[in-house]
Image (cartoon, rainbow, N blue to C red; front, side, top):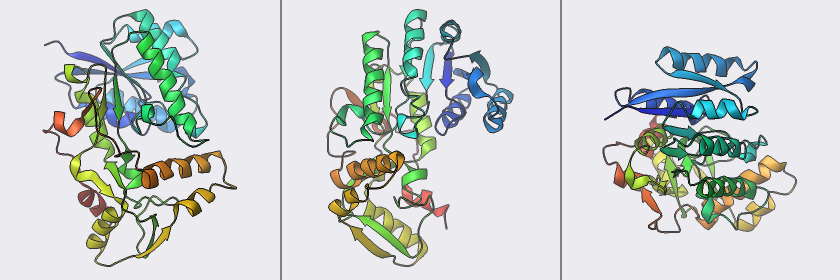
Length: 314
């Protein structure tokens, strides 16, 4: 079987660098390409990371989102495109920048699979989301419609709650580290969410690229042992810590009221946490025919459980 040629767009970002790493690890089956954007400027960390990938065997392709022909030329060199550009909540609005990539992929006409930048909550289920955070989901749906209108073969990947942002801190808003004395509990703390290690997200994503079972479907990363309530996550940390934390419950009404006075980013975070931890949007549905669950498709991936993940923070 011929080696797949995979282009990662946004390869120096939070998820992108992990996908590049996962792709490079499959060097017997994949030739890894990373887009070198001319717009990188003086971001030395990204430049050095990019060339560290080259040292590890990745091939760099220079292109610009302001130069359509350069994107078409880049896409023509590969079979698969994985985009991991940052979302609209950051203010960069790079989600919609993917429309230029969709246009280039359509013109090139050679791509066997496109995985757009999603990796969070399934946007098709978030039409009711609170403003201003709703733009994150709305923009992703604009990109989905463009992909499907262009008849580009796709896989959408929804990865739920990144462990680095939601598990390590026991889902607290103001820190990325686990509390050692007291913890805020959302409501009764019993709503189920899904915590996923970011390296596992990358592993599952790479496995989809030529899997016919994920063609034109959504891959939901919902490993069963990581479907936990906030209280269950806290209990795992307490067991590791050897002590019980003071728990302060915040009602749905008080939590939503906390949005007042926050900037747009802060309001977006509160809105998303409301949907996750009060509404239960990550687990209140069954995966239908339009989707597949990652741990069922790929049981060979020994995904990281959250008690194992939290040991790092002792």
